[in-house]
Length: 239
Image (tube, rainbow, N blue to C red):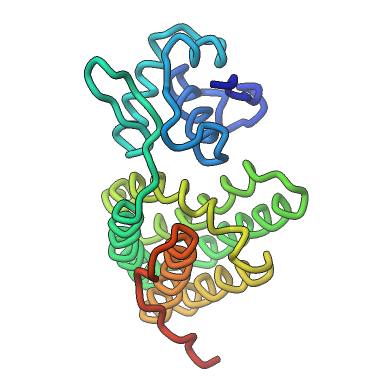
Protein backbone atom coordinates (compact mmCIF):
# COMPACT_ATOMS: atom_id res chain seq x y z
CA UNK A 1 0.00 0.00 0.00
CA UNK A 2 1.33 3.42 -0.91
CA UNK A 3 1.65 6.02 1.78
CA UNK A 4 -1.47 8.09 2.33
CA UNK A 5 -0.85 11.66 1.18
CA UNK A 6 -1.81 13.98 4.00
CA UNK A 7 -2.47 17.69 4.14
CA UNK A 8 -1.04 19.78 7.01
CA UNK A 9 -3.40 19.44 9.94
CA UNK A 10 -3.51 23.21 10.47
CA UNK A 11 -4.05 24.14 6.81
CA UNK A 12 -7.84 24.32 7.21
CA UNK A 13 -9.41 26.23 10.13
CA UNK A 14 -12.16 23.60 10.33
CA UNK A 15 -9.54 20.98 11.26
CA UNK A 16 -7.47 22.81 13.87
CA UNK A 17 -9.50 21.53 16.80
CA UNK A 18 -9.81 17.94 15.61
CA UNK A 19 -8.65 15.09 17.79
CA UNK A 20 -5.98 12.84 16.30
CA UNK A 21 -8.62 10.19 15.61
CA UNK A 22 -10.82 12.73 13.81
CA UNK A 23 -7.85 13.89 11.76
CA UNK A 24 -7.07 10.27 10.84
CA UNK A 25 -10.69 9.70 9.79
CA UNK A 26 -10.56 12.82 7.63
CA UNK A 27 -7.36 11.76 5.86
CA UNK A 28 -8.34 8.13 5.35
CA UNK A 29 -11.84 9.03 4.20
CA UNK A 30 -10.39 11.43 1.62
CA UNK A 31 -7.96 8.75 0.42
CA UNK A 32 -10.88 6.36 -0.04
CA UNK A 33 -13.00 8.93 -1.88
CA UNK A 34 -10.14 9.85 -4.22
CA UNK A 35 -9.34 6.22 -5.00
CA UNK A 36 -5.89 6.46 -3.43
CA UNK A 37 -7.12 3.69 -1.12
CA UNK A 38 -9.07 1.59 -3.60
CA UNK A 39 -11.82 -0.88 -2.76
CA UNK A 40 -10.34 -4.00 -1.20
CA UNK A 41 -7.11 -2.30 -0.06
CA UNK A 42 -5.89 -3.70 3.29
CA UNK A 43 -5.89 -1.15 6.09
CA UNK A 44 -2.90 -2.15 8.22
CA UNK A 45 -2.55 -0.24 11.45
CA UNK A 46 1.23 0.05 11.48
CA UNK A 47 1.47 1.23 7.87
CA UNK A 48 -1.33 3.75 8.26
CA UNK A 49 0.08 5.11 11.52
CA UNK A 50 3.47 5.57 9.87
CA UNK A 51 1.94 7.28 6.81
CA UNK A 52 -0.17 9.61 8.95
CA UNK A 53 2.60 10.34 11.45
CA UNK A 54 0.45 9.12 14.35
CA UNK A 55 0.48 6.46 17.01
CA UNK A 56 -1.58 3.32 16.46
CA UNK A 57 -4.31 4.24 18.97
CA UNK A 58 -6.00 7.10 17.03
CA UNK A 59 -5.67 5.15 13.77
CA UNK A 60 -7.39 2.15 15.35
CA UNK A 61 -10.23 4.43 16.48
CA UNK A 62 -10.39 5.94 12.99
CA UNK A 63 -10.82 2.50 11.44
CA UNK A 64 -13.69 1.79 13.83
CA UNK A 65 -15.40 4.99 12.70
CA UNK A 66 -14.81 4.19 9.03
CA UNK A 67 -16.37 0.78 9.60
CA UNK A 68 -19.42 2.43 11.19
CA UNK A 69 -19.75 4.61 8.07
CA UNK A 70 -19.58 1.59 5.78
CA UNK A 71 -16.24 2.65 4.28
CA UNK A 72 -14.23 -0.17 5.84
CA UNK A 73 -14.79 -3.80 6.78
CA UNK A 74 -13.16 -5.65 9.67
CA UNK A 75 -13.07 -9.39 10.23
CA UNK A 76 -11.47 -11.24 13.15
CA UNK A 77 -8.01 -12.60 12.33
CA UNK A 78 -8.13 -10.96 8.88
CA UNK A 79 -7.82 -7.29 9.73
CA UNK A 80 -9.55 -4.41 7.96
CA UNK A 81 -9.85 -3.35 4.35
CA UNK A 82 -11.66 -0.74 2.25
CA UNK A 83 -15.22 -1.81 1.49
CA UNK A 84 -15.89 -3.17 -1.97
CA UNK A 85 -18.18 -1.33 -4.36
CA UNK A 86 -21.29 -3.33 -5.23
CA UNK A 87 -24.55 -2.70 -7.08
CA UNK A 88 -26.61 -3.87 -4.10
CA UNK A 89 -24.78 -1.47 -1.81
CA UNK A 90 -25.16 1.35 -4.33
CA UNK A 91 -28.90 0.73 -4.57
CA UNK A 92 -29.44 0.51 -0.82
CA UNK A 93 -27.30 3.59 -0.15
CA UNK A 94 -29.18 5.75 -2.63
CA UNK A 95 -32.57 4.36 -1.63
CA UNK A 96 -31.87 5.62 1.88
CA UNK A 97 -30.61 8.96 0.56
CA UNK A 98 -33.62 9.46 -1.70
CA UNK A 99 -35.92 8.89 1.26
CA UNK A 100 -34.13 10.87 3.97
CA UNK A 101 -32.68 13.76 1.98
CA UNK A 102 -35.90 14.56 0.16
CA UNK A 103 -37.62 14.60 3.57
CA UNK A 104 -34.93 16.94 4.88
CA UNK A 105 -35.16 19.33 1.95
CA UNK A 106 -38.97 19.40 2.23
CA UNK A 107 -38.60 20.52 5.84
CA UNK A 108 -35.97 23.05 4.85
CA UNK A 109 -38.15 24.63 2.17
CA UNK A 110 -40.87 25.42 4.70
CA UNK A 111 -38.39 27.23 6.99
CA UNK A 112 -35.82 28.64 4.58
CA UNK A 113 -34.57 32.14 5.38
CA UNK A 114 -32.56 34.70 3.46
CA UNK A 115 -29.60 33.80 5.65
CA UNK A 116 -29.96 30.13 4.73
CA UNK A 117 -29.99 31.06 1.05
CA UNK A 118 -26.91 33.26 1.45
CA UNK A 119 -24.97 30.49 3.20
CA UNK A 120 -25.93 27.89 0.60
CA UNK A 121 -25.01 30.26 -2.21
CA UNK A 122 -21.56 30.83 -0.70
CA UNK A 123 -20.92 27.08 -0.62
CA UNK A 124 -21.99 26.77 -4.26
CA UNK A 125 -19.55 29.53 -5.18
CA UNK A 126 -16.78 27.71 -3.31
CA UNK A 127 -17.69 24.47 -5.09
CA UNK A 128 -17.49 26.12 -8.49
CA UNK A 129 -14.21 27.87 -7.75
CA UNK A 130 -12.60 24.70 -6.38
CA UNK A 131 -13.64 22.71 -9.45
CA UNK A 132 -12.23 25.30 -11.79
CA UNK A 133 -8.93 25.31 -9.93
CA UNK A 134 -8.75 21.51 -9.91
CA UNK A 135 -8.93 21.26 -6.10
CA UNK A 136 -11.07 18.12 -5.84
CA UNK A 137 -10.73 17.90 -2.07
CA UNK A 138 -12.07 21.41 -1.52
CA UNK A 139 -14.77 20.86 -4.15
CA UNK A 140 -15.92 17.76 -2.27
CA UNK A 141 -16.04 19.70 1.01
CA UNK A 142 -17.97 22.59 -0.53
CA UNK A 143 -20.43 20.21 -2.20
CA UNK A 144 -21.05 18.50 1.13
CA UNK A 145 -21.40 21.84 2.92
CA UNK A 146 -23.94 23.01 0.34
CA UNK A 147 -26.20 19.99 0.74
CA UNK A 148 -25.99 19.93 4.52
CA UNK A 149 -26.65 23.67 4.73
CA UNK A 150 -29.99 22.87 3.08
CA UNK A 151 -30.75 19.88 5.29
CA UNK A 152 -29.73 21.76 8.44
CA UNK A 153 -32.14 24.56 7.58
CA UNK A 154 -34.96 22.12 8.29
CA UNK A 155 -34.18 22.32 12.00
CA UNK A 156 -33.90 18.58 12.71
CA UNK A 157 -30.54 17.58 14.15
CA UNK A 158 -31.65 13.95 14.21
CA UNK A 159 -32.46 13.92 10.53
CA UNK A 160 -29.09 15.43 9.65
CA UNK A 161 -27.31 12.84 11.80
CA UNK A 162 -29.03 9.85 10.21
CA UNK A 163 -28.35 11.19 6.71
CA UNK A 164 -24.61 11.40 7.33
CA UNK A 165 -23.59 7.68 7.13
CA UNK A 166 -25.38 7.10 3.81
CA UNK A 167 -23.89 10.33 2.46
CA UNK A 168 -20.37 9.26 3.44
CA UNK A 169 -20.74 5.86 1.79
CA UNK A 170 -22.25 7.41 -1.34
CA UNK A 171 -19.25 9.70 -1.82
CA UNK A 172 -17.20 6.70 -3.02
CA UNK A 173 -19.77 6.10 -5.76
CA UNK A 174 -20.36 9.78 -6.58
CA UNK A 175 -16.68 10.24 -7.41
CA UNK A 176 -17.05 7.53 -10.06
CA UNK A 177 -19.93 9.42 -11.71
CA UNK A 178 -18.28 12.82 -12.15
CA UNK A 179 -16.52 12.06 -15.43
CA UNK A 180 -19.88 11.13 -16.99
CA UNK A 181 -21.95 13.75 -15.17
CA UNK A 182 -21.64 16.49 -17.78
CA UNK A 183 -20.15 19.92 -17.39
CA UNK A 184 -19.74 21.79 -14.12
CA UNK A 185 -22.39 24.16 -15.45
CA UNK A 186 -24.89 21.32 -15.71
CA UNK A 187 -24.25 20.18 -12.15
CA UNK A 188 -24.46 23.76 -10.94
CA UNK A 189 -27.83 24.20 -12.63
CA UNK A 190 -29.15 21.19 -10.74
CA UNK A 191 -27.93 22.68 -7.47
CA UNK A 192 -29.38 26.05 -8.40
CA UNK A 193 -32.80 24.53 -9.04
CA UNK A 194 -32.80 22.86 -5.62
CA UNK A 195 -31.71 26.07 -3.91
CA UNK A 196 -34.24 28.16 -5.84
CA UNK A 197 -37.10 25.86 -4.82
CA UNK A 198 -36.06 26.12 -1.17
CA UNK A 199 -35.84 29.91 -1.41
CA UNK A 200 -39.37 29.98 -2.90
CA UNK A 201 -40.60 27.76 -0.04
CA UNK A 202 -41.79 25.22 -2.63
CA UNK A 203 -41.27 21.98 -0.75
CA UNK A 204 -42.65 19.75 -3.53
CA UNK A 205 -40.33 21.26 -6.12
CA UNK A 206 -37.33 21.11 -3.77
CA UNK A 207 -37.92 17.41 -3.09
CA UNK A 208 -38.47 16.64 -6.79
CA UNK A 209 -35.34 18.49 -7.89
CA UNK A 210 -33.22 16.80 -5.24
CA UNK A 211 -34.68 13.38 -6.05
CA UNK A 212 -33.78 13.82 -9.70
CA UNK A 213 -30.29 15.06 -8.81
CA UNK A 214 -29.57 11.98 -6.70
CA UNK A 215 -31.24 9.45 -9.00
CA UNK A 216 -29.26 10.64 -12.03
CA UNK A 217 -26.01 10.16 -10.11
CA UNK A 218 -26.96 6.66 -8.89
CA UNK A 219 -27.96 5.60 -12.41
CA UNK A 220 -24.73 6.88 -13.93
CA UNK A 221 -22.70 4.86 -11.45
CA UNK A 222 -24.85 1.77 -12.01
CA UNK A 223 -24.28 1.95 -15.76
CA UNK A 224 -20.53 2.35 -15.23
CA UNK A 225 -20.65 -0.81 -13.09
CA UNK A 226 -22.39 -2.69 -15.90
CA UNK A 227 -25.87 -2.72 -14.38
CA UNK A 228 -29.28 -1.40 -15.36
CA UNK A 229 -30.47 1.96 -14.10
CA UNK A 230 -31.67 1.71 -10.52
CA UNK A 231 -34.21 4.52 -10.19
CA UNK A 232 -36.77 6.20 -12.41
CA UNK A 233 -35.77 9.80 -13.13
CA UNK A 234 -38.67 12.28 -13.23
CA UNK A 235 -38.84 14.84 -15.99
CA UNK A 236 -37.69 18.36 -15.24
CA UNK A 237 -40.48 20.64 -14.12
CA UNK A 238 -41.48 23.35 -16.56
CA UNK A 239 -39.93 26.73 -15.78
